[in-house]
Length: 229
Image (cartoon, rainbow, N blue to C red):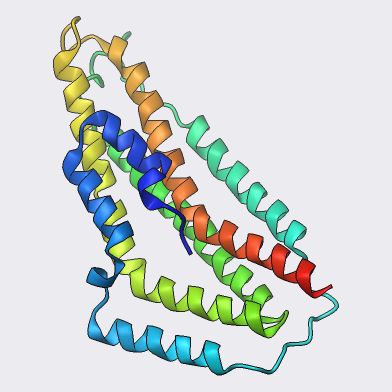
């Protein structure tokens, strides 16, 4: 339920930082999916595929079921809340009269990035489940798609979390790189504003990546309901 991972904002941003190892890992995840799947995962996906190919009974849509536009509007509200959380954060100010005390400290950024990752999981993961439930109550083809998405999520979640959990470390490397190369020296904070823009760009790119499966489900729902009318 993902698009071309290699062309995502996340990979594009990391590539500008020169993290070739991270880019290779992301490409491997996108283009060599079979290497991520163990025997038990393959059995799970095989079972889902068999149920999809043999399913024939259609599901009668429920009158109270939300439409694709309703789901999309709800997703945009979730996205707006997350974007506001990202934009609202400000780096902690020291007790002194300037920012030099925090110029060399990455810890506040690490803490905030991990907190934003958790917030995205809390908001987006349940919404993805909700979208699958809606699709499952429409007709057989969309129910099959929802079942496949659930199986893929179960199979890939641990791998995805392990991969995304490395982003704070890559961000710290970028922090130290900018600190070392700034002409004004490590104790002047003029380079922090550009870094914070990159901080926000990275977490926004991760958010968009996490939203891709949900957007795919909603798009399929819109197309599926349109073709059955």
